[in-house]
Structure formats: structure tokens, C-alpha cells
Length: 124
Image 1 (cartoon, one colour):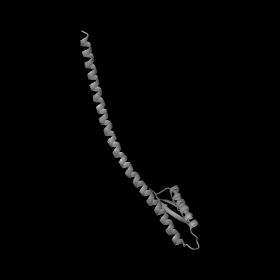
Image 2 (cartoon, rainbow, N blue to C red):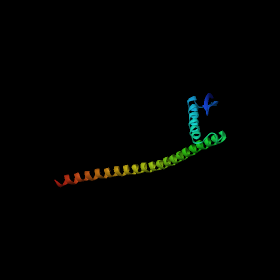
Image 3 (cartoon, rainbow, N blue to C red):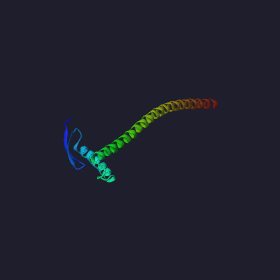
Image 4 (spheres, rainbow, N blue to C red):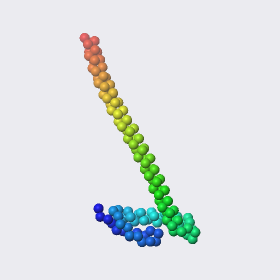
């Protein structure tokens, strides 16, 4: 796969990014960073907080979101696995009930057929 070269603006700085992702993806990533950066800068007075601390807070915020999403994903995967197991159990129950139903129908057909024979023999 060829590498894409894209220029993005992050925190007022133009950066040249190179990667396998599409330009749209890389621009979206830059937008997310800029939005988080704006939130942090709105929270802290720039005169009292240096760029290094702002970058650290930005990294912490993004890592926090990442960890939370991974935890949500892990919980969803666990839930999906449990649902798959339950689904297999239910499929087995359906299979057993279908077999029982077929056997019951067969027994009913035999009983009905025998009843007709007995009923037919009585009239003679």
C-alpha cells in the first residue's frame, strides 16, 4: 500500500503526515486533536500553564478516551461471546424440541391410525 502525505494543522502548526490512512482519516484525527486542545486551553489560563503541560494534558485526555473505549470494546466482546454460547444452547434446545415434536407427531399418527382400525372393526 502506498503511503499518503498529508498536511494538517494541529494547534496552529502545519505538520506533514505520512501514512497508509486516507487523507480524510488523517484530517479527522487532526480535528479530534484540535478539539481536545481547544477544550484544554479553554480550561487553563495560557499564561500560567506552559505548552508542555498542555501537551501532557492533551495526551492524558486522549489516552483516557482510548482506555475507556477499549474497556467498552472488551466488555462488548465478552458479552458477545456469552450471547454466542447462549445461542448455541438455544439452538440445541430447538433441535431437541423439534425431535420431540416429530416423535410426538409420529406417535399421534400411529394412535390415530390404530383408533380408526379399532373403530372400523367395531362396526362389523
